[in-house]
Image (cartoon, rainbow, N blue to C red):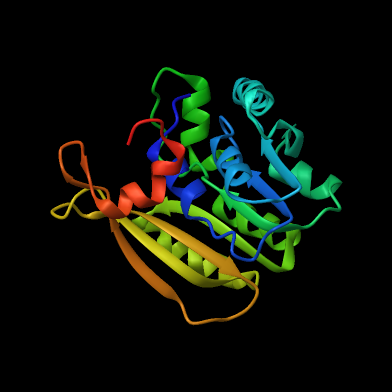
Length: 219
């Protein structure tokens, strides 16, 4: 699977200001978000879970090849199984969940599974996070903008409150396509920002460059 903009955005944006000592990436895919957080933080424990076997194997390979391999570990498991078996709680949980509810086939079963919401329903995700997140922890997720309200409602039902929102559009003439959301168990004033990725074709905005350039060889 290719590394997409969504994952890079989440890995770059998720807050590490609370100096998390434990991190969990739910639905890790290639593992890029967990690796970014290893680069950005001093967390001693960075776990990931991935259900798809091919993606899991690629994630493990990428973890082992990274400079932070001693802090990275991937479990081959679904979220429900992981919640049932894990006593650990995490200071930071991140997820770039599958969100394409429509059953559209690309001809690649792994890619289809990763893209269909049915493989990780939003209600299952927020319920699992509410059990795995430490009391002072932060949960960060990236979603289609149109799902922002629905997801926030589900999060509130399990006691997770929005604290930071970044809405993303491709260029200044484009509609907002993505929402990056952070939640905690504590109510706070919500910080809301807008990020535009490009000024023109392959001409990135200064804000996007500042956010993501630490993770690209050429930017």
